[in-house]
Amino acid sequence: MTVSGIDSSGKRKERKFEVIRFGVQQKTPTSPAAVVGLAANQTHTVKRWIPTYQVHSSHSPENGAWQVHDNFLIHDGPDNPMGKKNIFASIGCIEICGGPHGFVDFNNFIIELSGPKSVKRPEQLVEIGKSRNMTITYLAAKRPKLTIN
Image 1 (cartoon, one colour):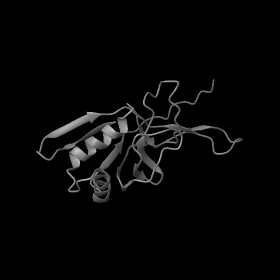
Image 2 (cartoon, rainbow, N blue to C red; image 1 turned 180 degrees about the horizontal axis):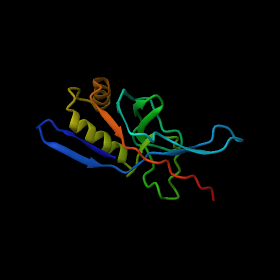
Image 3 (tube, one colour; image 1 turned 30 degrees about the horizontal axis):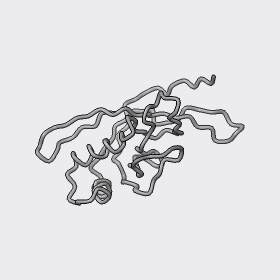
């Protein structure tokens, strides 16, 4: 994911973050598993910061999530997505990797670009979410083929 914007001094900044975009979902034990996630080219205004959100499958150094569209969120992800010890369950949210503080770094960069008036970090994130000045563009991508070993 490439995040870009203009900081408080008027300087354009850009930073890349490793993310997981697609996940595997199996709605019932007898239904087939499928790769899920937003695949079409689309742009959304981020709706809000959800401070009470917690990742369901692992510990996170920063709780919370950005609501993009319905239940599609941006939140913490595995430190090393290819590592065998990083077990995360994803059903199509954008998960920020690069831990153990990848999501913290991501949010720090969002704060840097947004220039919130609030002083405390929790209030800054809520303020940014309420401003509805953050957009995300998903480039068209094919969902990966699901292979089960």
